[in-house]
Length: 302
Image 1: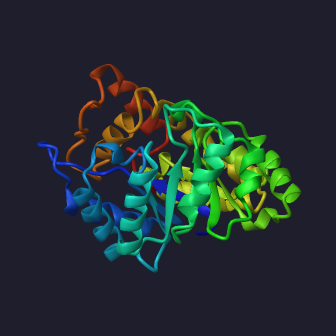
Image 2: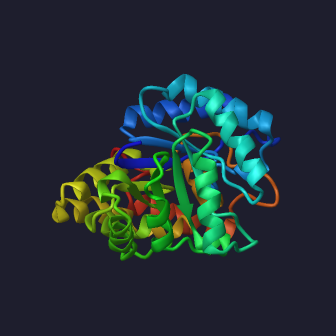
């Protein structure tokens, strides 16, 4: 894995709910051309929780065909049952993916020692691991001290930190150093588009971005500016995206962003599998305005 902007990619579907593999291939080509630094597939934004193992394989095969050796392929393999995490991680290895995104097991609220053991066990499978900390969804927070405790594992290479708390960057760096691990050995990626600029200016390494689905070049440029500590350029790039960062969560992700991708003409259908649903008409104007403010419905480059 490397620094930069990773797109938290949607899984395009047909109006009947089957995976639209030609559209997936087109989206992957779009991101390669746009300068996206890494691919994060089969995460929350990719509706992974409602895909079968066969469907996952079909998605991974297309991603590997299009992107292997060009940008890192990070695949979500985390779920509540460790045995299923293993199964999905081994599948990702077999398909040729580069790393796994493993979320803290949700709902059951494991203690910190259980989370430490969980991540080390998954890293022992051999595929590099990006830990995904998103307490707002999972109900459990993998604390900086615990991240520091596992950071020395050779296959734990990154953290997606989605608390929205930019002070976590310094806390995680301190916890790593307290455990004899250089901060350069663990990539810190923001999972919160609204605070990504401050996260990277504060010492983070990049983002796993929902916004990048519709503004991939700008998110890449934003990350490069932040990594170069160019605050003026960061503000110039990020200001028009501010409303989109917020409004793309007007309903549960990935409902609004799928609508937005269809709105800018990159997919034909914004279908989501139950229990999710397509964006309520009540929010169409909100999303349309956010896209217009970002310049994504005019002639401005994506």
